[in-house]
Image: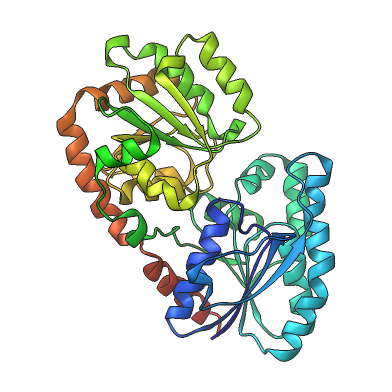
Length: 380
């Protein structure tokens, strides 16, 4: 098939959508499809990725605004600068599939492709923002009016699929999980060497918390859980990520007098994340809202048990699965009990580690590409 991928969320921004787009595009190309990629990058940035070598990419440079009112204008600039590129691309290529991944500018590109081509439209709904909008009737109506109606929707969590079905009742919506790079995250690594590389203590239990520091990711509830863990049983919590709540979370750790049990290491480069997981004994994902969780899958591929909030895509991964423990969201006491149980029970950690690695084997990007290809074929 001839496939056009569209994504406003792309490198160098490290997140679930950008990596999903790259990994899926590359896996589809390996399956013999012709894949083009239309994506937004900051001015002056040249992505280096061997996985992009098999994908014909058209990268649209835009200005970089990290936050504030101007941040939302990235969609407008991407659309304004990219529309002529897309027009030229579609004039010279007859696509079978246009597959987009973002809510706003990407949806407008899809609407334009419907006007000028006969390509089937596929939307992957990744966004926790969709879940936030869904809870508000006015915003939900706005979504229904603004979003381009696809021929089929793919969602990487059951919750996202169900919500989309309720908004767009006549669109076939299917659940296809995120994937994980088993070669990168599933390769065995030496724990002591990993800890020395990251400057972490050689001894003791280390808990990974790979989260962007924003409200929905619930890291504040993890910090509030620490005082409930008996002091002589407290592990070292290593929080990898940055975001708007960074200062507030560091202040909260000081207020709770738990700073010696927490280390904020900022955003770790994606190629160093396997080392981060190798240095850890288990992971905590304390999200309040979760569309899907690439971090949880990557941690499991590395053999880490995962304690996670019972929300969104985390339910899909850990429900009826001995790879970790689900806890109620925003409940620091129950979270502390789960943390204490894994910290003090090495047998449980070992058992869950084996289950986690075995579970992750089912989620290779090649398997996700096969399922996505079957979704495409259902349209013809």
